[in-house]
Length: 300
Image 1 (tube, one colour):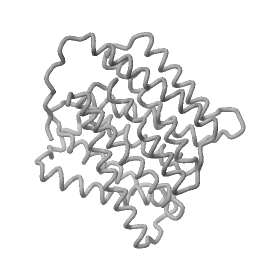
Image 2 (image 1 turned 90 degrees about the vertical axis):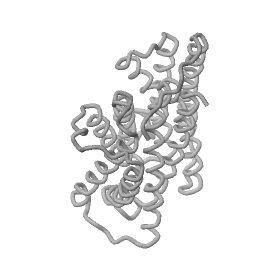
Image 3 (image 1 turned 120 degrees about the horizontal axis):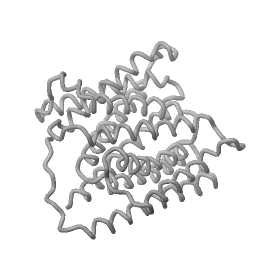
Image 4 (image 1 turned 30 degrees about the vertical axis):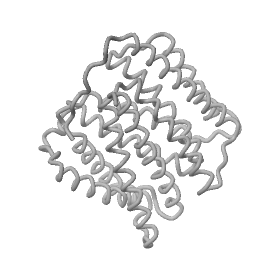
């Protein structure tokens, strides 16, 4: 498999892990606060990731955290986690996922601006069209508009910062180390916010089991999204985030009885169509290049 194809596979696996985790999280927020769930899930996830990183000898001195790109990546992850979970509890999971489908377009735009990746006028037009699709989903100023949908828009901004920063981190820094740092940071944030958000509530055995499952899925999501962004070109890999919408639709119908409305369907079609067009243009650009270089080698 080429680096781009490996990156696409890793991205698809990451989206499955994150989306099913989101559905579990939304289900649990009926009884527990966001902060408590962040902390509980984070303790399990951080422990698993740490043990795996230690086994793979991927841990590094903490002074590496002074690297500005690693710090920026962690901040982007924290902001994205908080805004997404706050919005997810108030709007259908499919709507939240549909808004997130703008992330590949935002990342492509960010890669062009900050990483100097070539993006022609056709893909710029697709990016603007995709953002118009987001406006249809969010419906600002119209009946059915939820301010919590804007929280998910904020998630897109934070996640774009995270992914661009990931690309700038030295390739000698193992992906598992980045995953460990990120998981611990989110866990600590959840702990700090428990009491401001209502304090600790009793947890049943079934809730603890679901939290543990969610933590394992977060581990899959963290690791594979980092691997995907470091393996292939951002403009090729990013559109494979769209697989998360299929999972979100399925979870919304089966777990919450949430069915998509016409605005969500139309807006999602525009956003996904725009993203797929950017993928098409990337393939044309790649086919015009000389023989592809050998796959880069990264630390585990």
